[in-house]
Length: 118
Image 1 (cartoon, rainbow, N blue to C red):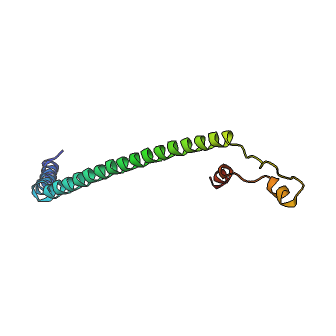
Image 2: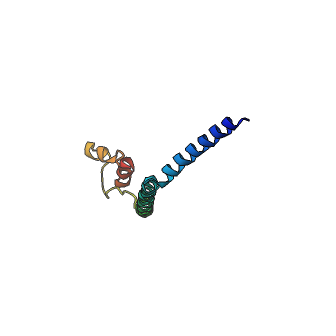
């Protein structure tokens, strides 16, 4: 390499170094620091919101489980009542009469009506 080539390379390196020094010495790093702090704050807020949502969903699940248990218990009780209470025909009734024949046709019990609604 000739003397001129070395001088040119040296000037190029010095220009690049000066550009780097200017970039480093400007307020840009402070702006980046502020931006990083802002992002960290937003991340903290998002994490808090996620935790709040998890708590809410957990409480909704607990309420749903409780309601399901209560509904199951009510259904079991209703089935037990249905098994133990059989419809009876009045004493001295005449099955030949039209009204009593209508009374004899199958009717929906309250439990059956409840099941249809569910």
